[in-house]
Amino acid sequence: MKFAHARIALLALLICLIAPARHASGAARHEVSATTGTPQPRTVTMTRAELLDKIKGGWAGQTIGVTYGGPTEFRHTEGFIGDEVEIPWGDPDYVRTTMLNAAGVYDDIYMDLTFVAVIDRLGIDAPADSMAMAFAHAGYPLWHANQAARYNILNGMMPPASGHWRNNPHADDIDFQIEADFAGLMSPAMPNAAAEICDRSGHIMNYGDGWYGGVYMAAMYALAFVSDDIEYIVTEALKTLPARSTYRRCIEDVIATYRRAPHDWHEAWRMCDQRWNNDTACGDGALLPFNIDAKLNGAYVVIGLLYGRGDFGRTIDIATRCGQDSDCNPASAAGILGTALGYEAIPAEWRTAVERAEDLEFAYTDMSLADVYDTSLRHALDNIIRNGGRIDGDAVTIRTQHPRAVRFEQSFGRLQPVERQAIGRDLDGSHTIEAECEGIVIRGSIDCGDKSYEARVEVEVDGRVVDNFTMPADWNRRRHELWWNFDLKAGTHAITLRWTNPRDDASLHMVDALLLRKAGR
Image 1: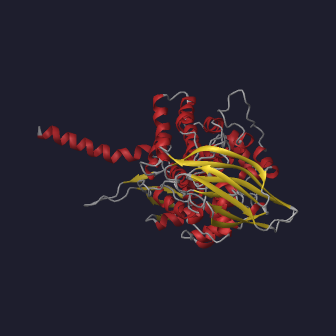
Image 2 (image 1 turned 180 degrees about the vertical axis):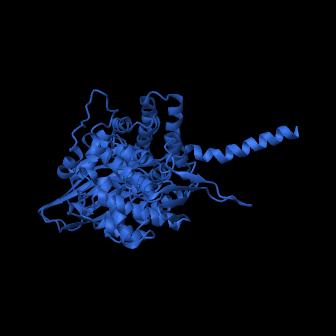
Image 3 (image 1 turned 135 degrees about the horizontal axis):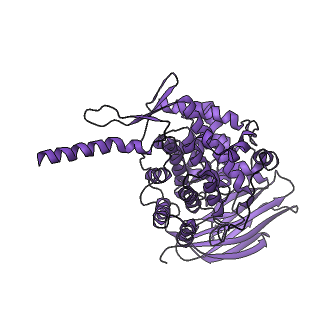
């Protein structure tokens, strides 16, 4: 019996030592640190060239994916994109042509590069306020959580308040999820280091599920440096999210469906449509087919990765055909897979198009792909040293990290959208909305030829003035929604909006009001 127990113990020890390495890509060499007492983190060693190949694969994959999905973005919001819909590719100059003629397609990349540039200037510990100011004053147009945050920052509200759900109705939207690639690509095998960078940058514009989307994507990138096992990457990275978060539960449902029905991605799509195709407070999406919610679109990234099974083209195509934000989702999926495969392993039919565009600077930046490859490598090497790794000549040794869950956050409490109340009129002096609600989002916009003009609006709730704000006519400085409040008492409210500085050449249009009440009421 003692001999049998000894054999079992020896076998168990061997399994423990071997198991971590089974997920590693062939390029990396693993070591298990000698320990006495508390176990030390495992390390992985690769050459600078191998590290750069992974980084290039991530940026190139992201560029390929967003280019492929660009023509279908938000054109399919009520169903997946069927095989009968042809999505163009094949022209070796397709990426270059798109960058020159449709620069806005690459918003998720030039947004990333804003943060890359700040880190390059100020270092890895660049503060959130510096990132926020660079983001808010950049020349590119923004939407949803990004634009709501930009307005907040330009009006003196800095992160994390700028992304908090009480100040940003789009807190759960996809914005940071599509901008967090840089954090993972500068944190090889270090998902917790990536999460710390995401804490500073992601709370500029998001909170809760919106922040979790970026943390999760960055963690998948980080793990893709040391594994090409897609199911492992998807499930291991999920450990960075709290178990009770709705984002994590959504992705767990995708993984469970994949394991039950591994040959038909439409099964996972239908499950998401039934369980997770909802949005809480986005003025453009709640109770409508349009859905820019982070968790649903994150699920589409994971569907592409799992059902693509490591095939680059199939991964991009599935993530695109899931619909909704169908350029950003394949960008994330292809970036993660490109990191796992490495640049040189991306099939030539895809890689050639990127090679022909690597010298072009992305719009609103002074960085090309060739530039960002080298910049990201410098940041990754700095981050490796910062987190206990070492560089010996051409050998780079990384102290790997086991994913650790970030803190729990939940946007909007128990509020749920229940009704849209049409308004459809210009605000002429004042207008009163009567509604039974505990939360409200009123959509509207200002139009004036003088872009320096700012309308001033006063809000009265049940006879008491509760807010005063401005509506800039300048598109880049605009307030994304007219007004919102998520802390109303249960009951019927009279909400009056009053335009206090009207002028004849301006119009302030009111679209509708999204009403929310707490679940169970």
